[in-house]
Length: 204
Image (tube, rainbow, N blue to C red; front, side, top):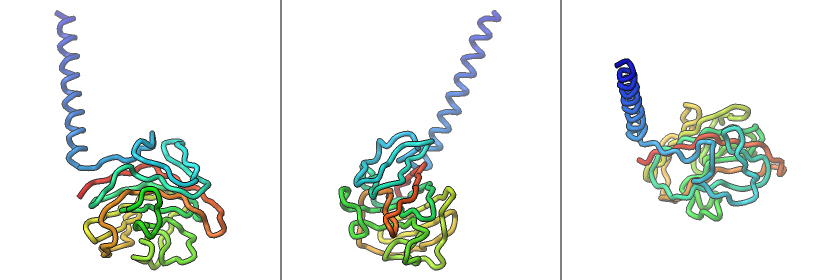
């Protein structure tokens, strides 16, 4: 009898654990967020250019070269969250609605900038280059940061560490496209470090 009671108790514990796991999975699914990068692999991304991307300590890191990690899928309307770390001198950014996955530039996409030492500070960190300026410019160097980028139709909002830096700016230049994470050259070709450790997207 004692052995049977132990078996029954183990089965009950297993069922309770399964229900708890199912509730967790349902909650995550109902939230609508999809993980594009979790620090473990680059299955959802294609590298282009010369940046020396490598997986390191739960992040993808680059400290040399000029290039991008480009998502394998197109996206239209969404809420995007990106966790990143840079040095102040690092030229980086999150490019959205990239229309050419083999050539990512400010002419083929919107650039949500990450660059504390950009010569034209109005389009530095927190800005959408040539579309939405920031003044004063926030800084991101030397710490982990969270970008939240909302693209819905022709309207864009950018939030950096809880601070809204772009508020419902409008542009109909690009309707959909890829997402790209950048490591770029500095003013004097001096490269800094960029790290990305989490990228999540929620279709709207």
